[in-house]
Length: 98
Ligand code: SF4
Ligand code: SF4
Image (cartoon, rainbow, N blue to C red):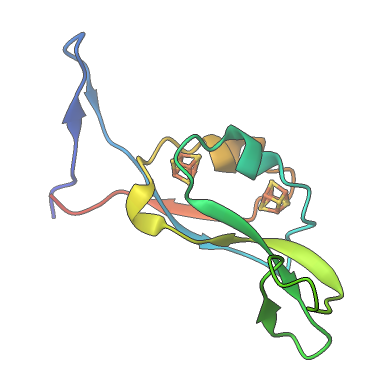
């Protein structure tokens, strides 16, 4: 299977690795990945007592901890900055098929 690649203006070929998965069991909700992502892919969410995801936009929502989630996967450009900054190795990225 060939991978999706991009030819950069300088002529180098780059293989983007797109975000696939965030391990919310390992996530400590530090928000570092959110700060480095310039593409509005990520969103902090709450996890309630029953393990359900709740929106932080809901003022009435009760939650035990905050974790990162993938909100807009189609915005990802595959830069992997989120994975590099994550202190808990939560991220899985993958190249796309060409
Ligand atoms: S790979 Fe880059 S664009 Fe995609 S979610 Fe991570 S920081 Fe954002
Ligand atoms: S950097 Fe890692 S631990 Fe911190 S919020 Fe993002 S996924 Fe979670």
